[in-house]
Image (cartoon, rainbow, N blue to C red; front, top):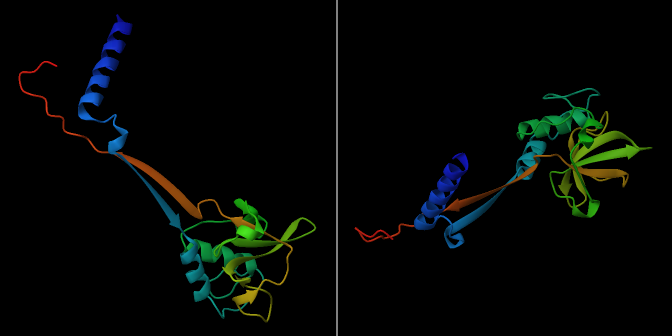
Length: 174
């Protein structure tokens, strides 16, 4: 009896779907939205230009390299790790495909020792070292990897199905 009930419910559901036009792919609309945080990251990075470097500084008055990157990303709405090593988490991107807003993590002997934010055109926003304020500088070494933090760019796809009114003559039993 349970099997009969399940089959009956499935058949009735199929009839409703067909009569309302919900099964028609012609009436379906798919929308893809890309939320790109990179412009916000770059805007936040530029706001801190001129702030002094201080080892262990995590803002807002002074920064070390990873503290600066973490602070900028937090202001842009994304939480990332505090150290350069922790900032390796995320999607690795080839150097040729890096985009402004991506994180550059510099490595020596396989260990992370510096991080910055790619600004485009061979430059990066960074808190470099004592005596050099936060600023946009040329990339000074090729010993880095490019990381795009998970959630840096979010793609959302939604499908909306428009119900179609089907005119069924009154008194008709199909």
